[in-house]
Length: 470
Ligand code: 5AD
Ligand code: SF4
Image (cartoon, rainbow, N blue to C red):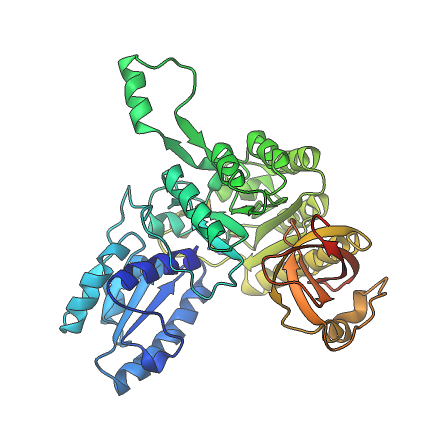
């Protein structure tokens, strides 16, 4: 989400004559895009601001700005801190940046943290920053209406609004033409994407249009529209909300081979009472029912999740239900967090953050240990299978190093380390698993069929069988 926002900012500032630089000492303007979701995310930003302050002490003409969720949450407080911040800009005010930067250049500190009900930056072509040239993110909606009790996002990013589908499809087409082979459609809750075609809707009111042909485009339709751009364009999306993930979306995924078979479906907790306190609007049975629907409609589809350990009032028994749900769902991957109280949220106002830190840590460690076992099992089950892999680039580690360090689970390890003129490349399966393999003649953006020969807990290791289609 933040990468996509930074790319919008880069585009807006590009129009105003600014170019990105990799060297902070060359920068006339330093912008830090921030996340407030957990306290440690904010702590990292404070650390970065120390670094920027020392740059500003050396070069006082540099303008320093804080963007995004922390800007929205802390507003003027950021200007009042000792960090020498000049501008504070919330997630719906990026169009105002050139003006705010100019006035900061004249010595006027500035804040714009107005949230909008309409802003989607639909007309802005993001400048792809630090991209691998293969995969790109497209924001399809902004904000969130869900009000999960622990979450600060509805306060920092405002109400949910969807972006016009034609602009999304156009952006995906442009990306494909530029050589990209994968788009990830982004939203806090993509399943509630909804666009009502105003002109048709208006005519319906006048009674000139028959009830046939609904004017509403939901997420399933949008997904189909993007998938139809080209079979060589992979389509991913994130994040799905269990209460809204529909069979229609699963059926659309089944219909299009290029829609990746991976769903990120945050569960947060395996206990229905905790889910109720979290205001998640589903219970354990509903969640497991959605996983069953995924497995039925999309056999082999990967499912990943987010889990929070030690939410307000969580008992030992409630925690153990998270562990049992993890086993039942058999997650391929998970992001796992300790509950961190965020000021202003429903939980901060009405619930007591009463699970002791030590207990939170122990529960999180149990969750991580179990997920590690599940991730290993999921990767081991892939050994011997052939996957279509989209090549992203050179692997950071050579295969031989990967195996030496993490060889503990390299079960049927038949890989031969080939001669030096083979490069270790990496790519992803449709299920979003990283695969490394040695090859002579593939480049980023190619599709290859790879047979998995062994695995570490994080990576599959394979051999190229053939280029796709040969
Ligand atoms: N404490 C811990 N984790 C949180 N998340 C969101 N808010 C909090 C919080 N206050 C996690 C959720 C969410 C992910 C993006 O971050 O698991 O799905
Ligand atoms: Fe936060 Fe819940 Fe919205 Fe996700 S769905 S952004 S967890 S409020």
